[in-house]
Image 1 (spheres, rainbow over the protein chains, first blue to last red):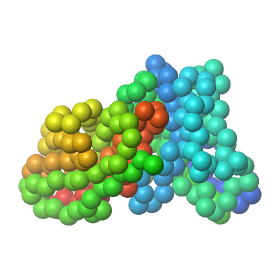
Image 2 (cartoon, one colour):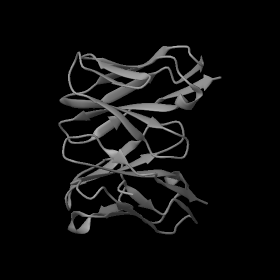
Image 3 (cartoon, rainbow over the protein chains, first blue to last red):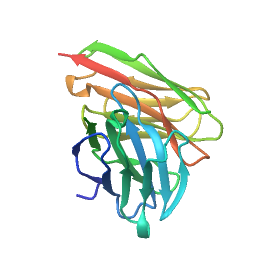
Image 4 (cartoon, chains in turn red, orange):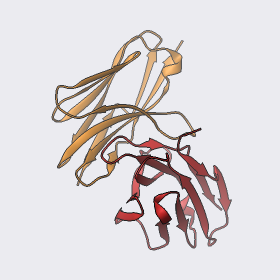
Length: 112
Length: 109
C-alpha cells in the first residue's frame, strides 16, 4: 500500500496523559500536513512541513501540541496534558508542493 | 482570513435525481480548489482539483466547475453508493488548504 499511513487508528486516553501519533506520508511527497476534525465540521489546519522544516503552525494550536518531521520522512504529533476538548479525529495528509493532498485514515482520539 | 462556505449542509436525493452542491469562498491568493469525498470514520478521498475560473472536471457521475467566487459539484443520476460527505477546500499562496464543513449527501434507492 503506497498511501498515507497513520498509527494508531484509535486512541483512548485519560485526561492529563500525553499521546503521540505517527504519520507515514507517500514516499515521494515533500509536504506533510496535520489537520483536526470534529463531528460535523471540516478538517481544521494545524501545521505543515516542507521536507523537515515546519513552515506554518495554526494560531489556534496551543503550546500543548507539538509536531516533528525528522529527516523529512514520517511525522509525529504529540499532545501533552490532554483535555476532553482534544477529542477529535487527527488527520495527516501529504502532497507534492502546490498540488492536491492525499489523506490517511486518521487517528480517532477519545479523552476520558 | 480565508473563508469557505458549503451549502446545503445536508441533501437527500432519490436515486437518479440529479442535483448540485455549492462551495463559495473568500480568499486571497487562490492557487486551486479541491473537492474531496469523505465516508464516515475515514479520511477524505481526493476527487478533483480546479485551478482557474471556467475550468471543469468530470469523473463518473460527478462534475466540478469553478467561477471566481464559487464552485459547484454536479451529481448526475446519483446512486446510493454516492452517499457521503463532500468537502471543498481552497489552497492559497500560504501553502495550506482551508476546508468548508461539507455537504452530507444521502441517496435513497
